[in-house]
Image 1 (cartoon, rainbow, N blue to C red):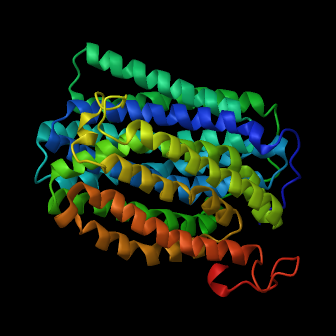
Image 2: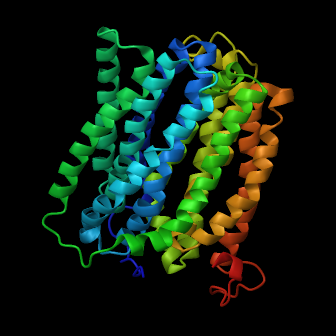
Image 3: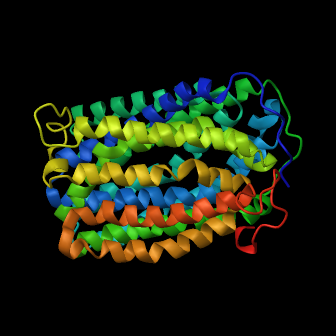
Length: 437
């Protein structure tokens, strides 16, 4: 049972935004630079195969993060601020085996691409992606815990280390003529290792000898985490299936173009992730306390900034024109006209969910989130089949279809949580629907 968090002290949420953006920005830059190597140096077919492995990488990281780390972060929010970092003692110990299990998902990518992937590509991608997938959720957990403990700049420093080491590792592997297939995930694995070591140093220094008020067990975390896992793994599995559907129904080249456009559109997800890192502790507290005015103010700020970021970004990188600074770096993204714009639009739709999903998690609505994803996923897969007709556009189209359906349900859940609508009379509704419990 999570206790009501103490009232926040100090600077307001806006003062935490710069650190959140720097944190997510450099973390995503590390992934961007690694992915850039793949989409620029691999050929059209191999690029599409890499895209399937990248989706599997995201899928595999979910197991430990949702089953153990997110429930642990919710426990940390309920502790006094000076004791929030103590959750690391239990979460890292409990998360090792789930992280290892999640990394095995990479073998599914190896199997699914085996008919079209050469051995010289499949082995390096499999080995390096497996290691990176094992390390990634723990590195993310350390950073997010620092945000929860009101140490946002220390989380940002971790991400800066992540980016610098990724770039250095790529440079060294390039100098020593390491095959390209080892570089994208290999550089991330090296960077995660050093970034995590730095983060653990910061955490144990920042806690100032604080002791945990109580210990948590795998059973306690997994009771809530199993629904969080189901909620997150359904769209991740759908993304993996979508990548394979496009690869086989359209072509590996089409999936490669979609992956290139996804990388160009990634700054919108960077903005969404950065804002979420900074704002999620506040909306999680609001959800626990049922503080609607705070939630409304933070959500409006979040959504407004996401839409503004897209409105500024699309004119800069959306078109195949001379002023586009990305065109020469990732030309494959512009092989299909307007594909980048579609990718940006899909990121806006997906990114708009991040903060409210964290809010629902803190309110123990993980079961409802799972039902929502299960209801939306079939439409996403049907949209992916459109690859037969629209090729690479099937990726952003399927994401937009899924995203709009999820947002409709999230709005209903949000209104129920805070007792909005006819039942609201200045207080939270007394009896939410059973679906949303």
